[in-house]
Image (cartoon, rainbow, N blue to C red; front, side):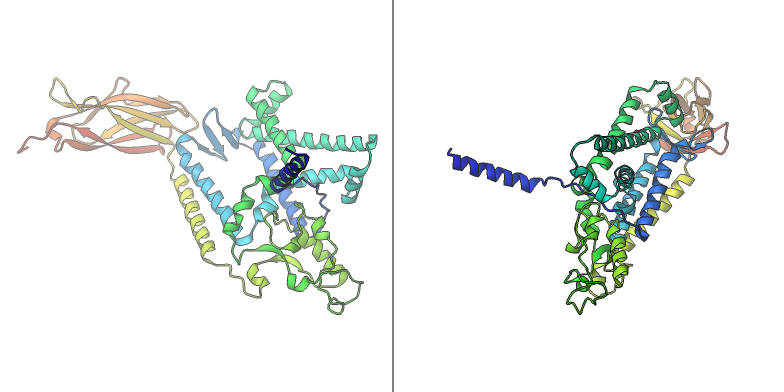
Length: 474
């Protein structure tokens, strides 16, 4: 291979690499004040407040919100769910997914701009960065400075704040799965378990890396939501857009000069909408998947319009249909469909939880023999009853059976059984009936399981009692 060919191949490789990955240019988001910035800050305070405070709330002598994986039960503010209640957790996930679809179809990337954990924690990390390194211009200047003790001190201070906040976040995260008060005591005594230690540091590292180092790259390259959100958009979806008809042609002009007299649009081409964008896009280039809908550009543009004496709303929340001069339709098929689905599943979940019985009874027949005949000539069926106690305290249960008149239950332990909280107890029992009372080969019977400690806890399950074919004329 000649030098020219090698150089050409190298250039092609570099070009191919450039198309696959663009080297990151650090973004320095400018601080902005305005209605949406205040709303976003309020959302950050509320969400982080809930995240850090909820594990410390106690109910009935235990942590109110605790996903106790070793004990296989979830405590949700007085409601305890077990593996048998997986259907309820599945319904909650479906409701969360439908809510995301609903709000996206209605208001675009509302989740991304205000409530996404990546957005919330990144906002906090940016605030800490401004505390230490100053404004956008001061940060840019600091990065261009040669290495010095001042620069090292500021960078070290920022990293210490980020790491401390990340460790607190990781500790709180583990506190949702391991009682946080015990976790805190074990931490102070340097007695953490290996898995608790691993997840604290893992989640801390993830918080530091995503919110402190990667930031917008998570939204642009890693988050799949940005890629498929357009499937939920339509011409009536609320989004942030630049009014091209009003703003173009853009250009700078002297204060007090009417835009149309200067042959320009309302956009003064100040570039502030780009400087405040946390993902570094120019909203004037149209709708882009990198836009997270934070509305920082709306706030800063309104400030500029107010200063130059032009009407606000050059960059605003709007819809494609409204930009084209049409009327936005809020109630449309997909919105109605998502709303109906959310309402039905939510109501069904509430009703199911309200009617939920915290016990379960499984009836397993002995499949080795259909039935036995006792020495007295009675017909006997053998079963294994699985008594499941999903109450937080041990319970004593009585098991009774209803069916043919002569049907009776026999067990080596009687018909009362103690079952520990969260336990499954297998009880072998036999049922005997006079063949004269059996009108069919398979007779319907009912097992009733009731708590002796709480009479309101009661459950009935249907089973079958097998016997010989009834004699003709009986």
